[in-house]
Each structure stands twice: as structure tokens, then as C-alpha cells.
Image 1 (cartoon, helix red, strand yellow):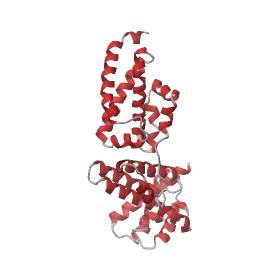
Image 2: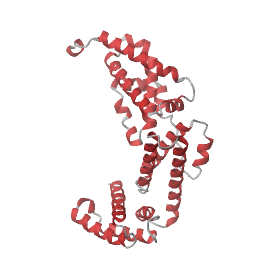
Image 3: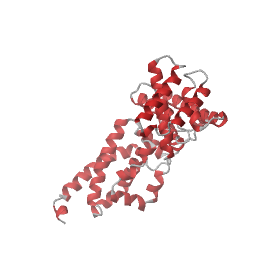
Length: 303
């Protein structure tokens, strides 16, 4: 193999030793044998800089592993390498959204993927991260969960994201709530708020979701009408009536996404309705954009 002949395997092995020695420092600080290793890993890598440093290290190790495998040289390192794969998988699952989660396996190269399939403990770790059920009792559940506050925050963020991803086609108003979650995480990462404050805000968001879903069941409104109502409820008087009117307007312009003239006419009709209750032009404009976005999400969900 000409390509293999151009590779200096001894230098690669030496570099692999150096990287694994660097990884030893991390492994010594995390008890990978303990039952709560998942929580410990999430807590240990809470800081973005720490995560990014480890991911860079892992990818370098992985690339060399892919080239050297199945060299006998790797035998002494295979168990340690499996621990690094576990850590990498947990970090990616804990700190990325559900849609990004799907990229985890694509990030793992061919021989590492094969290693996972051959080892039950590596397959199980992927499904080990718990999710909270988003309901009105969420505060009590989190309060009684005996794990560090930082882990509670991350688990709750994952739980909210997962819930929204699963429900958003039938409950498109959840997309606006998703933006609130990302804002909390941004402020936390920028150290504008504490762990305790972030957890409290995320619990409030979870309770808002539960409240909205319960209200939707009892509202007598269609999916579309309730989505507009939820957006309007704190901005106008008689939000339920306005929501029904807006649903009728959208129903008449069902092809607006594909036709610029239909979109222009739709915007005019929406502005007429909204400006009857909101006098501020900028506020009305923002609301119309939000309504269009909600309708776009609902139509995409039907495709």
C-alpha cells in the first residue's frame, strides 16, 4: 500500500503515547468505575473551554487510532481508549441539542464505531443519560434529585429540548419557548447568572410548557388558533378572538410561502388586524413576523 508506506508509524505511536498520557490526567480526576460516572462527567466538563479542549484531544487520539488499528501496539491502550469514547459520547449527548445529537455517530470514525458495536458497555452509555418528564411537578422532581446543581441544569435543558423537538409539530408555540431556554444557557455561559438562578428560570420555563399544554387541551381552539393565542395572550385584549381571526386569514393564503404576491397580501391583512390593538409600529411588525414564523413551522410540519 503506497499510502501506508508514506506514513511514519513510529512517530504516530509516539504521538499516541503523548496524547494518552495527557488523557491520563483527565481520567484520574473522574472515577470511571463509579455508578454515577455520567453525572461526574457532565459536572466535570460543565465549562465550555474544558469540553472543547477534551474534544480536540479525543479527535487527535481517534485519528491515530484509526490509522494504527489493529496494530498490536494498541492492545495496552484499548481499555483507556474505550473510556475516552465514553466521555466523548456523554459530552456530546449532554451538551448538544437533540437534532445535533444525531451527528455524534457521524463524528466517530469507522474503527471507533466498530469498537462501540463490539462493546456492550459503550452501547449502553449512549442511552444512560436521564431525561426529566416535563410536567407541573417538575420542580419537586428536580428538588428531590440527588445530583449536583450543574448536572440538574444540563439534564433539564436536554429534557426541555427533547420535549420541544418531539411536540413542536402539534404545538408550534413551543418554538418561542425554545428560544428562552437558549437565552438562559447563553447568560449562564457568560456568567451573567448563577447555577441556582439558571435552574430556577429553567424550572419556570418547564412549568410554562406544562401550563400551556394543559390550557391547550381545555381551550377548544385548533392547533393553529391556540398557537396564535399563546403568542398574543399577553400583548392584546381578547387574544382568543384575534387568534381565530388570524387563523382565518392564514387559511385563505395557504400558499403564501411559495408566492411573494400572496405573502405581500397576507402581511397587509395581518397588519390591519394587529394594528387595531397594537399601536406601536415596531411592536406590531415583530408580532407579524412571529405569526408568519409560527405558520411556516406548522406548514413545514405537515409536509
